[in-house]
Image 1: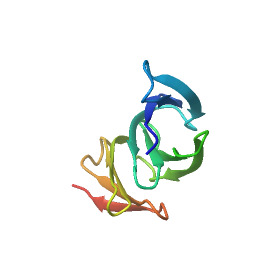
Image 2 (image 1 turned 60 degrees about the horizontal axis):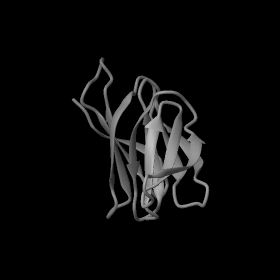
Image 3 (image 1 turned 90 degrees about the horizontal axis):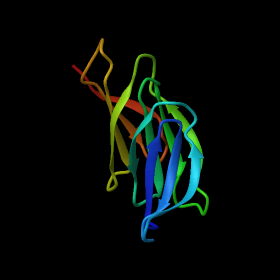
Image 4 (image 1 turned 90 degrees about the vertical axis):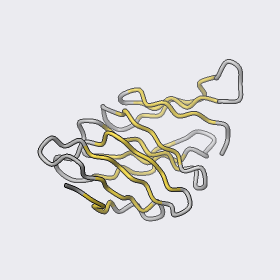
Length: 123
C-alpha cells in the first residue's frame, strides 16, 4: 500500500510511516469510540478496519488518503464485541470474530465494497 502501519490505541489509531527509521507517526485518527483493539488492512483497497472491544462497531478508515480518515462505522448488532479481525483481499471481505459471552463463537462477514455486516457462522 504506502508503507504505513496502523496501531489501535483505544479510541484513536496511530498511522506510522513504516519505511522511515525509526517509524514516524504521521497522523492520529479518532476511531469514534473506545476499545479499539484490533486492526486489519485491505492492501488492495487501502481500507483499514478497527474492531472495538466492548462496543458493537467496526470503524472503517481510508488508509491511502494523504491524511487517513474515517469513512464509516459499521454496527454489528446488540451484544457483539469484536475481538479479532482479518481481511480476504482477493474477495474484498472482512471477517470479525465475536467474544459475546452469551453466544461465543460467532463471526461476521463484511462486504468490503458495500460494508453491510452479514452473520457468517455461530455456535
